[in-house]
Length: 155
Image (tube, rainbow, N blue to C red; front, side, top):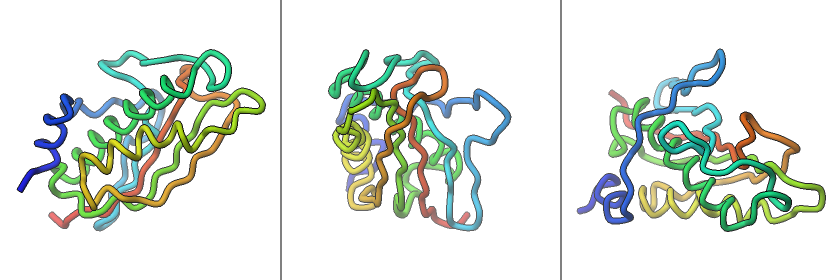
């Protein structure tokens, strides 16, 4: 049986350290077996993977890569909250915010970059409900920000 970390490695990825908050908030809150993550932006090693809005400075493929970076940061926060990726019982809901130029309507395709990675890593437990929302701007100029709700094992 493969683990989420095995599946990450098979994808050529490693779980990053959970990013520190950039303002006065907690990166995650756990209540019982439910974890809510704060919005995770598209950073790798503390650097934005892209900057700008979809439909203007950022194309859909780059937006999907930004969404994947956000998803990795969501996984890092969930692992910190639950103790490990193995303790994630079910990803319940993703909310994907996409910085969008006027008229841009491909938010779901951008969000698929994150959704597919989470399913690839968590398997059936990674299937989730989702909202993909276009917004005028996001923190630090990131093109994508993602928050998640997950059920985790007790302990």
